[in-house]
Image (cartoon, rainbow, N blue to C red):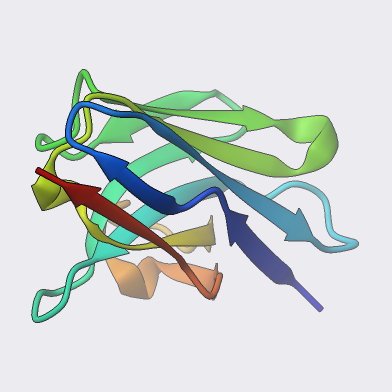
Length: 124
């Protein structure tokens, strides 16, 4: 049984910051990778950032590079997404995903587990 629980979403003004958390509840060892995706109304879900937990290699979507940082706490089986200088276009439901099956990190079908999401709203 695996459960991913996101938290930390909310409403902020443009230029503000939020930190999202994704806690993994599982008896398994850490996942090989954990990612954040987002989906705005009427748009497809897109990959935001990934961390490969063993090597600590990270990748980001071009739209968030330099503003978002993904990090991990292996002891807590938790991944964070620090979001700075938020823009209205960052408004979306943010989802945590875990356990990559290989392939491109930003492809939804490459993940085994998903959280329920946390809403981020950025006002101008």
